[in-house]
Length: 184
Image (cartoon, rainbow, N blue to C red; front, top):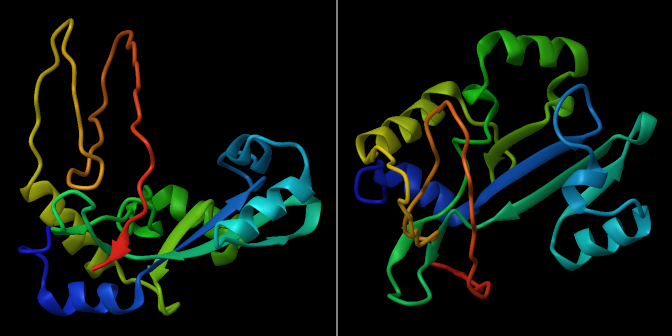
């Protein structure tokens, strides 16, 4: 990704990071209770404070969170600079246009269930998000699954997702110890 994204775009996100805004208890999306696995507002607020997440409460128990994270980090094993973020995936421009327009009409831009910005607070235009997604698509590898397949992913080096599927799915997940990543 770093090699194929425009240097100016990479530099912008290396300098400022990226910002994630989430709205919980809005018209769609998970509730804050589900997202943070607690019913206790004080526990949630402490978690946010300890993890660099700003949180504000709105009418009807709506929770809005915001966090700034690095967009390019150093892999703790190899030292390699890696594009590690969800800038394009969680951006408003990735929503179905009809859904996006409905949510903007119902809740305004601050009420979207999720959105990303540059870490300095500037909004991302559709062209930037589309460009990032085009580079992801150029690097996408699709593997047809067969019964018994196992997939191992280095979550820092490999962006991963899935295409729509039919039928049952059994997922077993094993996670290693969390690592602290540093900006590049």
